Length: 254
Image (cartoon, rainbow, N blue to C red; front, top):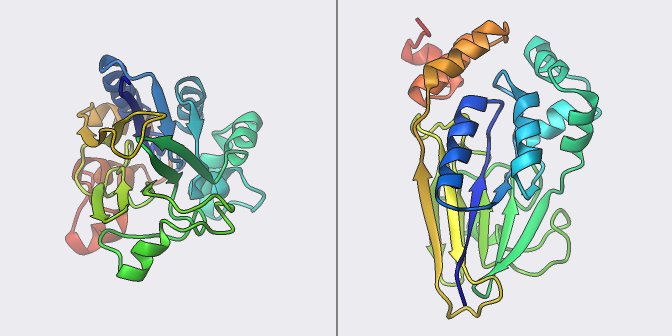
């Protein structure tokens, strides 16, 4: 049976320049199935355009914490969040908040579960090298995922830090970030490869892909539309260092 390849992207965060570069790389590889693990919007200047591109190019999209922040019922906190929310149309917000919290698929006899942050909810953050009990929890069904059985492979985004950690019968994958990578400045996505109806003995592959893009063009776009926090955004995109550490490291956009 021929193998199928799927591309998994996450944490675009309104960075249209990076998103277009990653989707072009996916298309150049002949991959037609793209799934998005959430946080399409927020932090970057073009959430509406990234939402439209997601609806056009992604087969399924998981709801992330920024979808809840910007498309949910709660009032935005602060000028920046209000700006990102106002940049979205009512239809954008309706679609974003209606995304599922979890998706399951079968590939080479494995149950592959896709979530944004964890099986607990969109907000419970799990960092690289989790403790043993947290690692085990990531594969179990929860009220958030529904009674859908244990996952063999759990794939998530949220932390903007691509990695893979494996134990017998359990593979934990973080796909990194397309639009706001914080492990290094280059956007990252993952390719899964396997047999959709195959047995566990069928080949199964996980590939991390880094795609360079025009960082300065994206920074210019943020300034052109007057986005709040554009300076912090510029530093993050150039350095891959979270804005919470900019002051202590003496980082400035200039």
